Length: 355
Image (tube, rainbow, N blue to C red; front, side, top):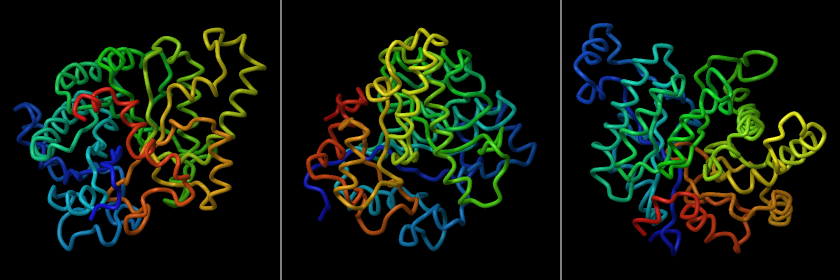
């Protein structure tokens, strides 16, 4: 029996793309020849190391193949146990990290077509993000325009770290296209590895990279706010995936304090960063880095000051929780319906068309 009485909306799960070989049927002839001619058809561009414990829960790992690699397994492990009504697939495929932006664009196109054919066509509960080659905003907009007519694609998928901060004006055409089509921008943990993830250089271990990525999300948020993206595109919404949310109060306090002192430098930011954040940003609940104690959790949520912030997510097949304990243990019951369903319906216009 499903763990929830209502049909929740899972905003972050990850079908596994086994490698460029799977994309050959979806590539244009030129790029199919390039991929096979260079011998990179077996190249694995996964953003998570396949063998790391965090990458897949033990009971979600198959004896053969990849965790999240089969639709039947996704149904049995991620949809049925929670009674999921809608699930948004976010493909963690590193094509946008390639320095060759033409190849990156070709692989993104093929990956989106693969997602539509192999997953969305076969399971009506699934939706997806549009993977785009962000290092070339013009090509990214072309892919948004190509895929946006398919209403099953409900957001534009970007990774957290790349060549530049996301608020820079060179990226604004992406946001214009997303706003025009009613598509939120989803920023997922992941990096093109252009720069070190810390201000002091490259870390040695996966735990360092994983923990410090919260700083990357903060940098991107501050860039979007400070550069004026939300002023220029007032209907744009941003969803942070795998960012955690325990860091939010400190970010809001510090951002607002510095804005008060330096607001003349950015006159287009006519409201505090905290107000802008609460209106435009939403965050998935996994990984849950919040306190388990209900009183402490309530205090954290009060400091954030936004009951609309959190979105349900299992982060399947990543190992974030055991069993069906996907909700943070301290989350108050008054927010369960909001987190499980209502907040997602509010932030994703296309989901409201099918419920």
